[in-house]
Image 1 (cartoon, rainbow, N blue to C red):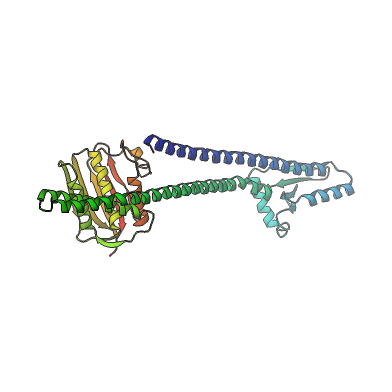
Image 2 (cartoon, rainbow, N blue to C red):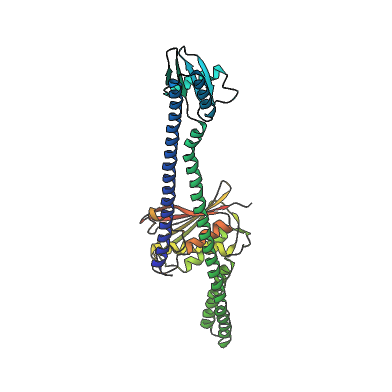
Amino acid sequence: MSQKRQNNIYSTKSKWKIYLGLAGLLIVLLSLAYTFYLSEKIKTEERHKVQHIALAIQTLEDTTSYLTLVSKILQDNETTPLILVNDRGGIDYGQNFGADKETDTIFLRKELTTIIKNGGKPFVVSDQYNTQYIYYKQSKLLTQLNYMPFIQLLLISAFIILGYLAFSAARETEQNLVWVGMAKETAHQLGTPITAIVAWIEHLKMVNPDDEMTQNIVNELRKDVTRLELIAERFSKVGSTPDLEPINLNEKLQKVMDYMRARSPKRMNFSLKAEQENIIGHINAPLFDWVIENLIRNALDAMEGKGSIDIVLKVVNQRIIINISDTGKGIPSGKLKTIFNPGYTTKKRGWGLGLSLSKRIIETYHSGKIFVKSSIVEKGTTFEIDLPLNN
């Protein structure tokens, strides 16, 4: 897969995230608008209903019809809380506050005070004998409807988040399957030529056993084949749970650094500083070596054959901390969140899987963390590995 195509894949996925977010926002806005529209409609209807009650009481002259209609109107009102106040300020009637509250004068007085404080304006009912005032507050139905937009917002947001998490999980699972398949196929493909090379090395040993130069070359070839066997073993372990063993990290880091130093330009300087002796960590040696080698190799590429690589090993708060610093080109701040994405690379060659696989090895297999601790363009970068301490 070309770098251009890989970038297009991540660009497309990023766009789909934006589209999903915009669609969710549109749904929320439409839902809010429609709910507020219904709320205003119900609010207007409630006010008209109370106004009709007031007009009915105001216009009726026949006592029998008056009492019958008022009784019917009040009986049919099952939602809007009402308080009927006489011209002396006394409370004559309360409705829809609860059966145990409608005869509680103290409670109704408090409710009336609250309605007035909130700007509630009464409907006036007057005739030649007396004047009455009808106060009302919005019904529980309307109150619940007012909360509905926020409930909808919460539910839709939860839906979007769950959808995003499900999409991300499915994508990660797909990527993992691809990585595992590719790694195991690579290990399988390496097996055949490695076996053949081992046979040829043994043949060369017997062809001229007394030639020192030939034997030295054969020995170096055998070292490289051993290295290839280790690489094949690493690939074969991807996708399966590796065994972790207690290993002295001081010695392990020294060996990896020495191996990389021997294959680096002479102008490269390496250093290892351990703040205490014999720091033991439970690791899978082949996979751990892979991570350290990959970080050092990336540092070498960033320095183009000249600079320093410094490794610091320490224990902080029952955690093993490994810092690997270089004096290379550094990483722009806008790229720090994407460098661990599979397929991301700044090199002209390569698949961009090194840091992604390193993150998987450290976090999934070793229960640790790996991240960029600091990076300054044209000055250098420090990667940090954080592992649990096993005493």
